[in-house]
Image 1 (tube, rainbow, N blue to C red):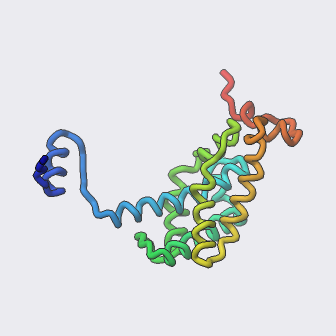
Image 2: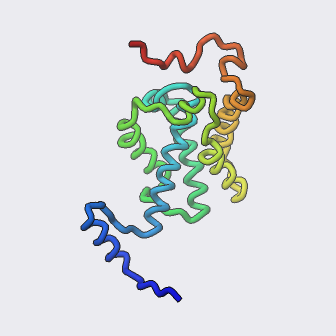
Image 3: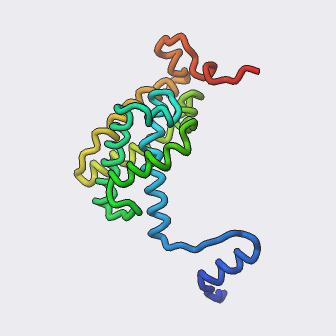
Amino acid sequence: MCRYRRRSYSAVEADLNSSCIPTRIVKSEKIWAALWAKVLYNCALNPLSAILEVPYGALGQQAETRQIMNRVVSEIFDVMKAKGVIVPFCDADDYFRFFMERLLPATVDHRSSMLQDMMMGRQTEIDALNGAISQYGRKLGLPTPYNDLICALIKFKERPADSGKNFNESYGFSWPLIESHQVVA
């Protein structure tokens, strides 16, 4: 029978740090809070960037897109509250202020991975992001109309990827998405 000596987390942390692997042991609640913070960020930005084919910064410039992002965030906070998720923000408004003042400015030129997937004719991660929020909402009896609509719009734009054609070819658009973003040397 194998016997394993149980080591404390702090001993493992010390060993890793002494091996030049920066390590900090945190409680699982902090990990879940960080994951949900990432969900908030990605759900607010990625699908709108893909639908509108713009970098993140453009989304913060228009009142209409700011309102959509704010509603998406509010719906996620409703779901988190019902699930008992704790994040380091008082409420959706507190997060959205932080998002607009600190997070978005740092990524104004970024193009979402969802937009890049669509440009390449690949399926997106919409089901794992806004789709998951919509699903949680249904299970919890909470309305998530903004997340639902965003999912439907992304699914519409994804359809050609299912048939092997890109969006422009399927709907007769004359401008190729990929070519418009290539760098000419």
